[in-house]
Image 1: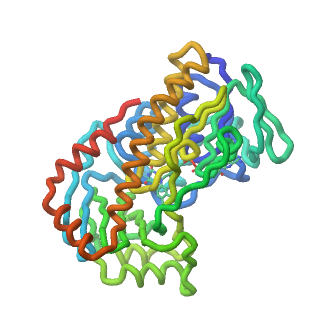
Image 2: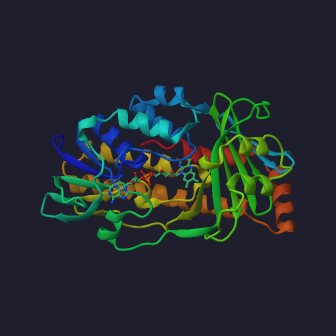
Image 3: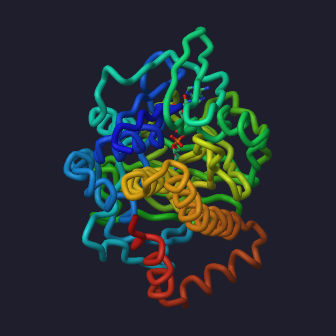
Length: 379
Ligand SMILES: Cc1cc2nc3c(=O)[nH]c(=O)nc-3n(C[C@H](O)[C@H](O)[C@H](O)COP(=O)(O)OP(=O)(O)OC[C@H]3O[C@@H](n4cnc5c(N)ncnc54)[C@H](O)[C@@H]3O)c2cc1C
């Protein structure tokens, strides 16, 4: 098994997490990415304790922490800034952090031999024989591996070929995001927050050095066009008079760097493995971003797969165990994430007022207990 040659389609966070975990246990991996160069777009992302625990095991946590900001507390607030709940998130042996995506991808990619990264390789098709998988790319190149992973994202071409077409499901709101600066120090130290309004919400994640990754989720149709005045002007209008530093974070983000995505996921899939092909990351279990766990699930997938391949005598058995363990875990996250999103995006004034009252009355311990289940996961 140690001599297995593994081809990974997709050089995003999932692909390079898989490469890092598999390399850690001595497997040889080649990463194929369709883009001409490796690139992660978009602000920062949360890596909660379940993900940083894996990065610690891989020896990467020090570099990740150096490029990020810590979150010890997570506040839930209303648009005036009144605190509805203060959830402690730092009660683990590893930190929860927010890191710029491009830094995270660079750290993962640097852990992989550069000569086995093939950019400009767009997967088009694969064929399986009894114990090999042959892969074809758009430029006419081919490759053969003992095992192939489809880490090619939400619209995965590997998944489409092996399991048939599946459209992402739009959940009713668009998310804008960026990285801004809180010059007046309105955010308490080592704290992140989410502010709930009516059909709109604003999240602030401590990314270190006074920078904050922010996200703005607003109920609009999926084809909602950009405002003629630009994304920044539209968001400043939507979030006018919200508590500090909401407007400042939007205002200090260059318009061209504000990203916009529909909140989409997939309904959970029961099968992700067929012969010697397995899915990993968003291709297998895309979820809405409400728990900040999509990337974390990919990191967990990577470690569970690597450990299964190390422990089992055959590829088939290792993949069977991988699929069994990961479908249960990720289905739970997909469903909870979708539920959290729909509650946070409620817009009926009476229901929103009731949500505020209940959130204010509920002890934070209930949320902390629930989150502990998610964060304490061990691969
Ligand atoms: C608004 C938003 C906020 C989020 N916040 C968080 C967060 O705070 N924390 C968190 O953990 N997660 C978060 N996520 C989720 C996280 O971004 C994803 O789960 C994660 O990026 C998935 O990584 P992936 O590698 O599986 O897929 P992707 O990042 O989509 O990477 C897939 C790669 O495959 C390549 N590819 C595609 N097709 C082909 C092909 N034919 N041939 C070769 N290569 C191909 C692509 O170019 C890409 O590089 C968020 C998501 C969104 C939308």
